Length: 423
Picture 1 (spheres, rainbow, N blue to C red):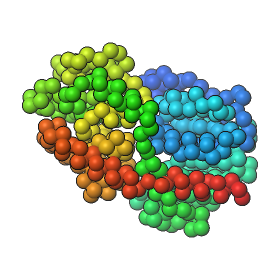
Picture 2: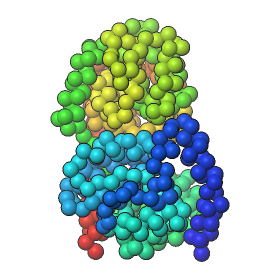
Picture 3: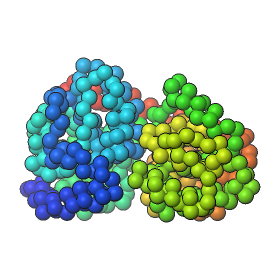
Picture 4: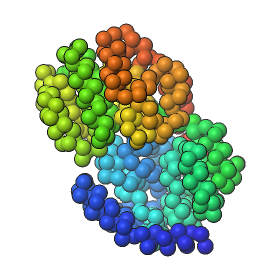
């Protein structure tokens, strides 16, 4: 009954959802209008049945899940895979990472959780496993997967106290969701206990740690970093990664202060969303800073390099003495600091990091990250590490040590997934 009520509410909201995705989001990013039938369960033609579906919400989850997906591809070489996401940037990232694999891999959008859409999707694919990342918990998707005798697994699951309180407000629906899950791999014991309190059977929970720590540089990536470094020269370089509106301005203001003491310093700014590229370019021009675009030829005299490409952020972190991780000087909850840590680059962050509350406390405690309160503190702290390469190296070494200390979640998750497939 509770699922029927939920489905009815979604149908009532259908016009609003469509207008939001197709019109409002589509106006900002035309790619939201592409492949729109997939939002209603139309899997691409040629999609194989008996696949493993792996769902990552957006680009951040895609990047975090990429090593896990690669491990699964190696573990199940004869199994088709369907990789799904919710956003165009997530889809493009999946395409960049996996479309050249000589494998049966389909990349598409996950249907909106309308009953008719998820039923259509699952009925066509008849998957052997549905694997979702973090807290992408969808009642109809899970229900129709289970009805098709497809086990449901949640990997890298996290649940904050605030989110748990929200689920408790719809306790019957939350209990229904928990009943559909066959196995859940959580970040830590606290998260695991919160899922159990929502109704998940304790024997279905495995504490694996976060797969976001299982990140490393391969030889090919290191070669690319070395190539970019050679282009940039020996000047002091810092990266501001995954920045947002109202934060771009703070980053550029901090760089203006840095230039008064280090006139040859270079800022690499990487906006979180592609639709912000031109807007950030306009902001840079308004501040009369010289700049180049990463997609075009780099000028050695540029004071700013605008990273207007996708899939390169980790490489750009590797070129820096120190990195600022965006979404944290404004109330967006922060973004993943571990790509910088994997490159042995220390991290600066604003105070708003609730999305990564499972990472930042330990990273800060191990002296691999520093929290800054505002633009002025950001500029002052950056100057310390741009003046002293040795201090920057120490900060980066501590960040890498924190990363290494917490690795192993992918191997534990693979063991869990294989056990589920063998049942």
